[in-house]
Amino acid sequence: MAAAAMISMNSFSQDLIARQAPIDKKLKTVDSLMLLKQIRAEQSEFPALDLYASWSNEFVHRYGKDVTIPNSYDIDLTGFCMPTTNTRITSKFGPRWRRMHNGIDIKVQIGDTIVAAFDGKVRIVKFERKGYGQYIVIRHDNGLETVYGHLSKQLVKEDQLVRAGEVIGLGGNTGRSTGSHLHFETRFLGIAINPALMFDFPNQDIVADTYTFKKTRGAQQNIAGSHDSEIVEGEIRYHKVKSGDTLSRIAKLRGVSVSTLCKLNGIKTTTTLRIGQVLRCS
Ligand SMILES: [Zn+2]
Image (cartoon, rainbow, N blue to C red; front, side):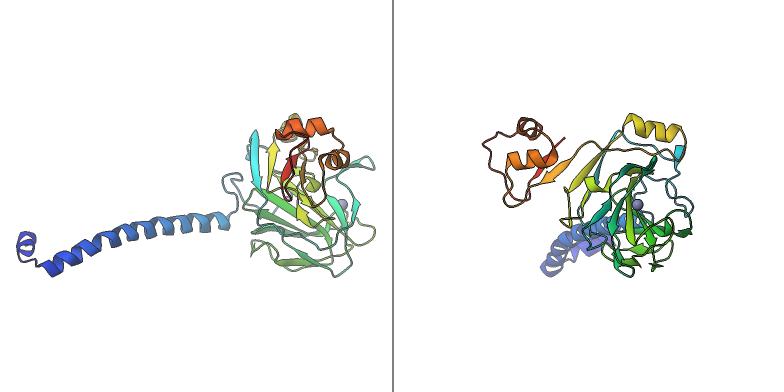
């Protein structure tokens, strides 16, 4: 049958077959695009599946042995949105009143709009009277989890997919809080990272396009030991060059020497800085 068809094939149908070939190729491309789309859809169903093997609405940061902390991991910060347009930091990340402050506090008024920092999926929407108050935890595709505390209103539900910039709640003064503010945490596999290493609230910008997480001895202890021990991670600091910046000005601002800046970034004291250029400062 096939042979007969071949014999009777005229130039017109040959032409058709010739034209068919690239279409087949195109179809294959479409197939792999579909597959890619499907993979992405699954990933958005459970963000950062490669890092977090499980999904639970239970705890903010108790992962223990359920996760493996990589030695180094590049967290993609592009596609971010500042969670609040407020710029005043009222409390920094770090030890405070003999406790560890695992996030930073940004002054907000009750009712101020709070938005998701990146695309992701809402993991927790809960109330904790003696702690976070009304809070939200979102897991993002880039591997980070963000925590938004002391809200007056939660406007999302657990397991809901959100986009960067989507309204998730309103600022408030609930829980262990004096004066309305947003308590904002950035966590990677449960480990609290100073949000100021990634988010520049005063300038409403990210510090760099990527934040490289490095496993530290502290992080190791966090996994092996108590779930509640907290780690100050991330000694690498960055500076995004702004108009008017000079090496000496950046050095002064970041508390490093000009020669250290040059060494870290492979530049000379005479190198012209570009606006938007990201310099490593530690
Ligand atoms: Zn706080």
